Length: 409
Image 1: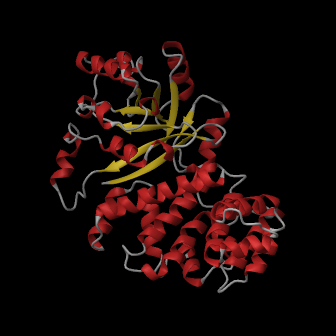
Image 2 (image 1 turned 120 degrees about the horizontal axis):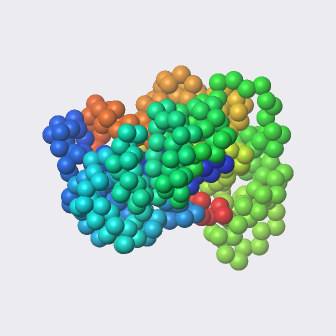
Image 3 (image 1 turned 60 degrees about the horizontal axis):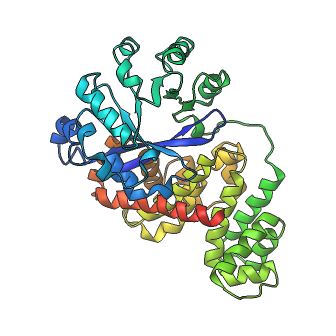
């Protein structure tokens, strides 16, 4: 199985929910799946399996998770398969679930069990016929390019005053700004939040300059612990975080200075902690999803090192994933941002020109997180990569981020 989480934002760029995108089988290994996959859902709903595997703690702050179901999957034993609180799950229907009595009764039954509902890919000319189903929905997903939202808002406000409208396929910041400015949609889904920065004349915040200096210190070959400690000492937040980390691993130790704390953590662990903690700080003025995305990319890429037969480059892959959003963090084009960081040539080549040993891995990671699973599956065939190994690497990255996030709070 393959699975990825897609965020849904509100007008404040806060993630309020995730959608699960999944692929059960590699269609290149099992061609029959291309025809029969849409009928394969009675025994197992892959989205629920994904959420149950991740655990509800992965979806922090009581976020909802949208799980796709079709006209067959809706009759599966969903309550038994759902291992997280049912009120966190929004069953995302498609038009194969029609406004007939059997489906309507089933939806009402599942609502009684605690599940919530949404519907997508519904044509405007079907709205009236789907009234019995829309009245049971909490969300309706609309392609903003195919609908006049001002008219849709009037229609839904009148007939379904509690339903939330979700704009999908929002793929540029300009689109998001325009759509969110009038408040007609409640949530937004698309690639707009991670579009690479191509030009910006803004100066980098002085506080971020300090963080960049710290990254450069710890990512230099055989860096000096005292140099890192001195840079950490300029930021009270980092000092407090470092002391909390050290006190976790060294009970009853009497830390006398930042240098002492750095020495207690050791070079390897200090480097890992600084890279993740500083990335979080660099994203402080950005949507929280940028932090999550860069860190999950980092761990996922590191986990894939042995899969791509470059296990000796796992540390470099971690940094490649971590710095893959540095243009967004610093509001600079990628080449300018990386010049500030003084990254190794193989990392620079992978992120700017897509060349070198690291490039295929970070490209694979990006395809995966975009749920471009057909291309992911093709590459797994070409490179003889096991699907389950990739899935486990992704789940491990999510769990790692969950634990890291909890420790950083």
